[in-house]
Length: 344
Image 1 (cartoon, helix red, strand yellow):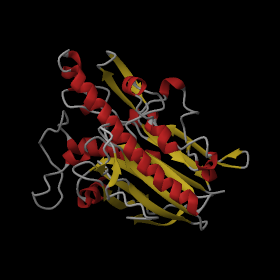
Image 2 (cartoon, rainbow, N blue to C red; image 1 turned 60 degrees about the horizontal axis):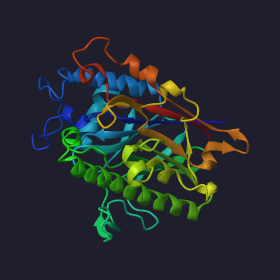
Image 3 (cartoon, rainbow, N blue to C red; image 1 turned 90 degrees about the vertical axis):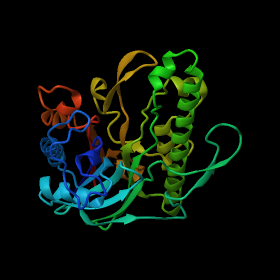
């Protein structure tokens, strides 16, 4: 049985590696510091090492550069032209890409899908974002990237690359610690979570359409969901949704529920992809924000599990510097990458 290896990684603010879009053809910045990084070439080299060491057929990237020519420049300069670039999707300076290994033994062909089954992720839809009981038009902060993949076996799968709305609130810590502004912060925090929920529901609409067309659909969903398996302070108190749960699906339709590639196999102490300071609870946290989900048809065959995954801590740590003035200089990204190996 052949194997398909899928990787997922949010590579922190790749766009800052490159000169401005209006400054001519794609080129790397040289001496300009970007959020604590003074050696862009070294950072790009370490990021490339992580990608090469994961040895994946498909690599989904979040926070990629704004121009495809810039991603092509990175692949040509640091990845030996080993990958075809699909994308970008999304808006602004943090875009979504899929890298397809050119010498993959599992993939025959891969292509981008712009619209399918009457679901266009670039379009608007109606939803109540601010809880005023009035339905408004909403659109994705970063529209997902959808890739069709034909395997050498003849099977065809859908690969989704997601980067949902952030929960970040500008000046959030100051607002939270200021009694006169705390209520305003809570309103913004809850609204952000309602926006993430809206995006998750829209993604689930598309997944349900895929399953309606083919109950045995082969689907892989990866990305930075900005949400993990647990409910946070605001979700518990203000009844916001679990985004990961919405995307995974309902237990009332188990044949349409996506399975997590690694959450049940990672050591509890290592089951995280990002670290941050939670100023609400005043504690440092290790959180699982990034995920790889697969459809039941890919997760097992009968009673035999056919998908296994992991968070690639060892590969990430090997590309980190032992001594540096700050995390952004030391680490290749603020998220740790993940892989899933699917026996097909």
